[in-house]
Image (cartoon, rainbow, N blue to C red; front, top):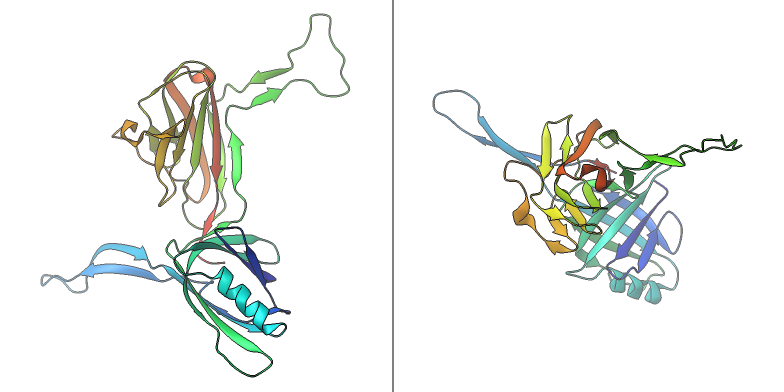
Length: 279
């Protein structure tokens, strides 16, 4: 680990590393997870019956040593780690950067006459999974360029680009668990009932809505943020009842977009971030 950056909701941030003024003495809670398996007992058999499982919220604790301008840096910690406010924890490794949202659980900065102070910072992450710091994106209906340099223009002319006619695209989730996705359908003409299928998992999501040119339909399938909006207005009730808020499974996923009518008048933008069970 090279460093940690904690950023609050206002965008103020603090770097914690192995050098002054905020020296990381120790950190716990970033490498593993706690999975709770729910069992029930039966008098008819040994062992238990599995009823489900859930991963507990993540708890991160840090000891941070202050060695310069103690009073100033104490106030910086108090200003950044505020109760009942959300923040984002960034982990910078040697070859990757991951992030996770947190709420401050505890901040303890002991009063001492010594020239250094050791602050104890405790963070609770209700969503226990780390994500890549940067999102991935893809336009499934992107145009394919037909011109390259050097250019020799034939007498009959040349097509500059063509719209992609292939509805299927591979999307790779490089994390170690499934993850949600944000889907944006942008209509360039009349479109009825757009949908996206994950052919790898057999899941699909379909929205029973008629779109006009210029309208934007956004579907967020991420845990805790699931929503469907048309030009910013919530239309969750328009989701096809048999469809699901589809996920990307680990590895390669084959996605396919479509519509009852107007498919060629759709641009389809995908955004996703791989998730991990530790930093």
